[in-house]
Amino acid sequence: MTYSLSQIRIIFIYNDELFLNGGVAAAAKVIVVSEQAFLPDIETLYRHHHGWLVGMLRRKLGNRENAADLAQDTFARLLATASPVQPREPRAYLHTVASCLAAQYFRRQALERAYLDALAQQPEALAPSAETRALILEALAAVSRVLDALPARTRAMFLMAQLDGLTYPAIAAELGVTVNVVQKAMIKAFQHCYAAVYG
Image (cartoon, rainbow, N blue to C red; front, top):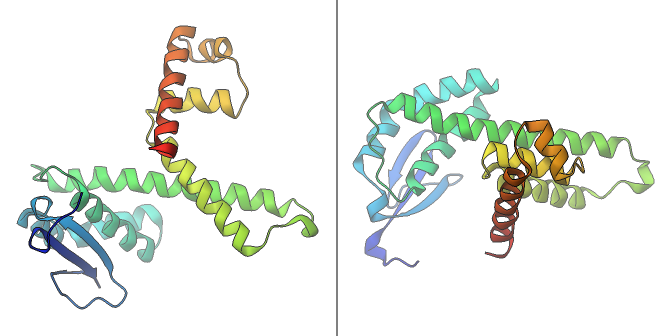
């Protein structure tokens, strides 16, 4: 979808300040959204609750830099939504969005640690270059994002089949469901993965 210049606002988030259409932003996150997606309510939400959100995330993540990044990602997610954001309970809403992003962050960190631990077990002669490691970590993060979009039970079944090598009857017995439920979940998972890769 393309927008004319009059339909677009560029929003800069820089040093915990929000600048609209033309703020100075050397190292800012730049988000382009349609005019309909931007509401003064989001700016108000940002101004009134950004500090609280950073504090809450700092307690959850353990450091201010990651908390600030995740808080900005939370507002970027709100700006990217097609429907207007007007929560009755703004802090509860922000907490929910930020918690989902934090869960993705922790899963990505665990994935990176597991990969780096596996690399450490390899002989040095077989170790990939720094560039190859970065590409592999990026690919693992992309796979993780695709899998995160699946419902939890479907994702569990998919991983049990693909990583653990369990048969559908074994998955059904493990989860206490029928084989038919597992088959339908696997079809949905494969369709989701196919759509993520091939559009």
